[in-house]
Length: 128
Image (tube, rainbow, N blue to C red; front, side):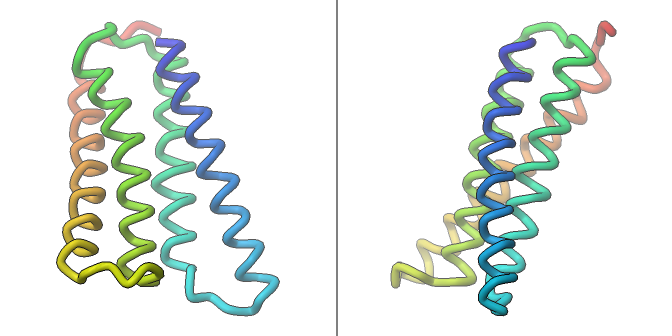
């Protein structure tokens, strides 16, 4: 479980760095067009992944496919939701609308799956 905690902490730290950088940029430029993306990077990426890393460090759920799936759907979902939100709201690359919408939805759905898996894990046998 420490490996789950370690990988989640490292990815959370990357999200924290990106979120802080975007916040710093917005404050310096006086433009707040990235505020929605900034907020989701910090809440979904930094806060959620960090909280799950602490959970895996404090509680020791059995190493199962469910826990592994949870860790990877949370990482993939956080990246997918954050980048999907960025390309949806900012439209930086001129990608087709259908692609952008589907990308955003898939990222958000993957993150939702990770929350559902976490909910299930909390009702299984946990050792402190």
